[in-house]
Image (tube, rainbow, N blue to C red; front, side):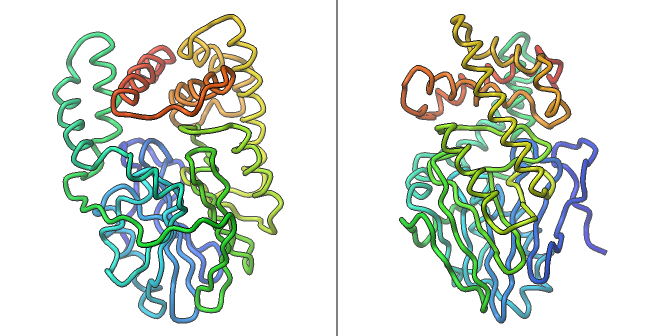
Amino acid sequence: MAEAILPLTGRPPRFAGGLRELAPGTFAWLQPNGAWGEANAGLVAGAGESLLIDTLWDQRLADQMLAAMAPVLASAPLRRALNTHQDGDHWWGNGSLPAEVEILTAAASRSGMEGESSPAELARLARLTAAGRALPGSIGGLCRLVHGMLAPFDFRGVALRAPDNAFDQQELEIDVGGRACTLLMLGPAHTAGDTIVHVADVGVVFAADLLFVGAIPVMWHGPSSGWVRALERMLALDAEIYVPGHGDVGDRAAVESMQRFWSWLRAGVATEAKGGTDALSISESLIRSEGFEEWRSWECPERLLITVTALMRELDGKPPLRVTPAVRARLFRQVAMLSKRIGGDR
């Protein structure tokens, strides 16, 4: 019997994890519950070859996923893999792939990967925050939050493997054993180079982090208008099944819920920011508002702080935030403060 895939945070699962067949030769790898680092992946199998979509945050998780996919890969070996964007929880498992597997990503994502924190840096941060969890005040809260995010992952075991090739096209169709898979680069939005995969013959979209289901999304880059356009493009595709980067498999209604989220959030931040309020106070106010009701049960409401910060920069006409380690530390300190204010400090 296959090992049950449970939330890495230790929380009760909201949906079944592991390998799920969505349509013939089309699979989602799901990691409950879609919290920090609990990312999904996908597999498209054709005649004699397969395409893997994303490789998770460490090689231990990637190895577990590939083992579960082994019965499919026995007759349709991996030939290519796609990294949908630059966030490590979607590509740091690349080192588990056979050397002959070609790894693709968008050029904007390849550039972004070069500026990301390294696995060694995150391993060091996990050790430091473990030691600081008992500290009082906001520093202790920050350590508890960040350690809870990082502790489930084995960053020391990651041997980084960058993508082999990067593409500049907004739309690229590739053949996977006789099946057409269309790669659509819809960023910048969540990050600079967000790419989705449309598997037209079965009406499935692997939406990566342009779609969150049951988990609050994060916008690191923006603009938010780019995310709105990306959702519109997804709904214009001939598809009924949408695999998010985080959370359970959704349908068109899940994409429409994300549209409503962005409409509500953009309007709310624009209104709240007129009073000169800071991102932390705006985030708390919005989470406590009636307008948040549709998404109140979703995982990680504290992530809203990062997106509100990005939206406020948009309103001020500033460029996207350059997320250096110092900037990331400042953001996560505020995330920890928001988590405590709304009762989510754990």
